[in-house]
Length: 456
Ligand SMILES: [Zn+2]
Image (cartoon, rainbow, N blue to C red; front, side, top):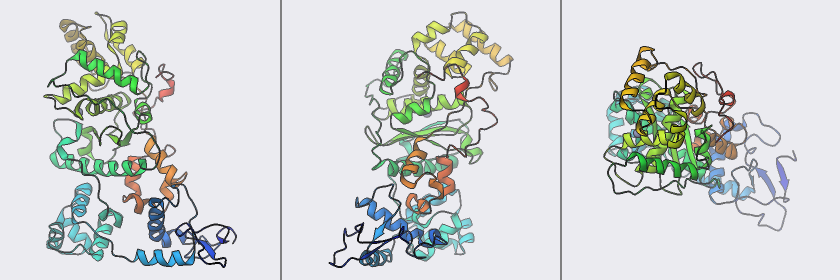
């Protein structure tokens, strides 16, 4: 009993009372509905009330993100309950984004939600009120929390997002990736707010040149290493961790379907000193590291300037970031063989093909030699399947921020779906918990076993 009820020992989180001279019985809002001592049925029945109260108290600065008990006096409880009954505003544009996110057509949604297709269409066009009743129907049909329809994410202009994608990527899939990334960005921003975690301070390159040359990109990659606290001449043992330490969050965008696979990475930053996020569709250790470095290249090179060939620049940047020019000259001889490149791959954690391109870019290997090597590479089937596996990396920052807010097992916190306005399944895939992450069959070798694990 004493664990859940207090007599004026604490102050009410909402009104800082008791305001009367008599001691008032404060109660923890987490236990209100089923009474003191009993935890049965509590989370489900109180989750919306709890989530509403904790987010409003958090915004008011009355409680910290980590507060696990919410003490309120009866007057505040009454007042807050009343406020809960205030009408929620459901936004028609969120219905459009919800369909894009889940890839559901108006017709399919109407069928599942039990309404006419014209109703869905009219709500989206602001020709009909988006009532709570409709929102509830759509939310259960799309398996999204009701709150999804009430939040307004920062709008990321579609053409300002940077993608690393293959040529066969379909427009509709890109739209879904855009939608999922926007949600991930919204969650990232909300988690960073009030966390005290440092924000990205990457270079803001503003060169006038429409196309940067290799030397300039090398220089910028080197400066970026310095900003990220990476030694100028060492392999980067964990690209993900280096980014996260510098305030660039990384989200995994795996396991959706084939449409996503054609996209390797996507990134955006709201500006210097603001949130930055890279989404990566994980494939293999070496490829993922290159994707991360490529997206970092976009953030550095293309946040503040236009380029006539951003993809080429981002690829050059990735190579330069992963293996600086002096180290290419030191480790790749003019007459290097595939066996030599294999060794470089094991140390520097980028693919043999990427090393070959890097060596060509800094003119360490001439055209004739590289042509020979490319031929050998194809003959051995290494274009599709290279030897030497590079350990897969896994992001941690987003999960850690969720833990900071919701405790050690954030995905079992009942209020997480409402507050983050995304289903737990989706949150889990964006920010997997380290304990449940299964190593995929293609990544058997952990980073720690590689010779370069201790560096960077
Ligand atoms: Zn790109």
